[in-house]
Image 1 (tube, rainbow, N blue to C red):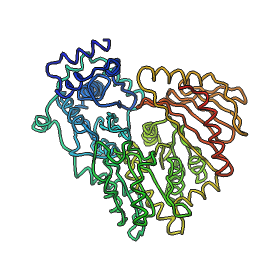
Image 2 (cartoon, one colour; image 1 turned 120 degrees about the horizontal axis):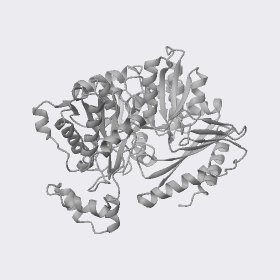
Image 3 (tube, rainbow, N blue to C red; image 1 turned 180 degrees about the horizontal axis):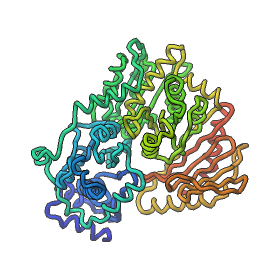
Image 4 (cartoon, rainbow, N blue to C red; image 1 turned 60 degrees about the vertical axis):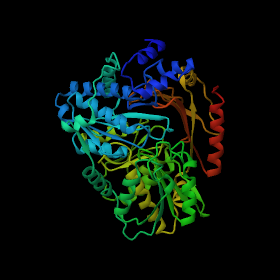
Amino acid sequence: MDYKKAYHHWLDQPDLDQFLRQELEAITDEKEIEDRFYTDLEFGTGGMRGKMGAGNNRMNIYTVAKVTYGLGKYLLRQDIQNWEKGVVIAYDSRHLSREFAETAAGVLGKMGIAAYLFEELRPTPELSFAVRNLNAAAGIVITASHNPKEYNGYKVYGPDGGQMVTASADALIAEIEKIKDIFDIPIMTLAAGLNQKIIKMVGEKMDNDFTDAVTAICYPNPDSTLKVVYTPLHGSGNKPVRRVLSELGYQQVIVVPEQELPDGDFTTAPYPNPEDRSVFTLAKALANERGADIIIGTDPDCDRVGVVGRNQKGDFEVFTGNQTGALLVDYYLKTRTDLPANKVVIKTIVTSELGGIVAKSHGAAVLDVLTGFKYIGECMTDFEKTGDYTFAFGYEESYGYLAGNYARDKDAVVASALVCEMTDYYKKQGLTLYEALLALYEKHGYFIEDVVALTLEGIEGKTKIIEIMEKFRNVNFPGFADAKLVNFNDYEASVSNDLISGVTTEIDLPKSNVLKFVFDDYSWFALRPSGTEPKLKIYFSVTGKTQAEATTKKELLKKQVTDLIEV
């Protein structure tokens, strides 16, 4: 169906949601109509994410119903008993998140599949935990993570509590694609579902169990003098993070008042991403006023955490995800002396090598997986079955960390607690967290990272991303500074090319549209189209003997790479 037919098909629905109808009727720009209807909002390996609004290329109750109906069909095809195991549904503070969650519950309930709906917003990692805790067949989280307020999303979790990986997602997508008309899906009201007990509310008991699981990973610190400023960035982290820190003994936790309560407009942080340094402006002012040692900030669905600590001069430094990850790996492995010999740290292919080097120095094995915490979770589940490794710690450069086996997704609740525990550990030695980072650099080398994200929306944007990726697949990239290119990995073709020996080997990972160029000094850069946003991400990781040398080399590499891109 072309975009004009799809547009009129929506308008022809007599029961179309009145707000969506008003929105459609107000559009006068033909390009806008085309963008809303030229394609269906894409469901990738982990779910879907997009701008909210009317149209089959937008997040709305109809696109949510369609995906949920496909999920229900997939679950019943996998195992008829899944109707009884049911699906757990959580949501964050975004506009329409609650409505989308109730829509999903209503679709499942009408299909006879039990739906466990959280009574109010909850963090994504608690959803992962709840799927495992309830032995459910699947989980759904309504969130667009750290995207601006116009966006929302839908993530699907498997029975192990991890996001769906490729094989399962492909089978689910096949069910979604069988749905002929988005408006033919029956939906049960929440009241009817509760009355029939096919929809059940989840609340305090699950919160208690989740808190117990998180605090079990951490060391209690009842005598701590650590002073913490915390911002939930208007999201779901406010209650669970503060509760966990309180139960562990951190009594001086100060919440940024302007960012404490849920707010789908993200009034003080239009881009509510801890990777964006500007979100910490209010927190820094409060921390300076109150003499805080550390600042932590979680994104709206509380699976990512950003860290800001004081440097040698007492000024605040915003840590990158790679820096925090390397610090946590070092701290966790040297303080958890009861970890077995087969302990493993898992990171992604676009994460700095520093954490891996640190992990190996503590006797841990290190595994690299594709971008996305679902692949870390998949390994965790496999190792529980095989016993090949014991999971110690997993992380990715985009501020996601996990310790322990209670969940299968990154958890900013446990990460926040571990960051406080770690900061207090160094404080008792007279060191700031930043000084601890410098000590890591002195021992293992200076690693500097950066990310360039090119936003390329619409049909033209998709075409441009394809063109750029093909260009780099065939580019003859020279070295930079004194570093020599030694390896080129194409994860979509599943081949690793050793440019010194000329030998090509197979990459034993699922296919993914990622290119990685590796140099002989641990430096590298990689290109990866985002699976959830209209962006092409270019990752850089550069090493040097000093911080100044590494920074200079990074800027040189960035210029060489970006000069090859014409946008």
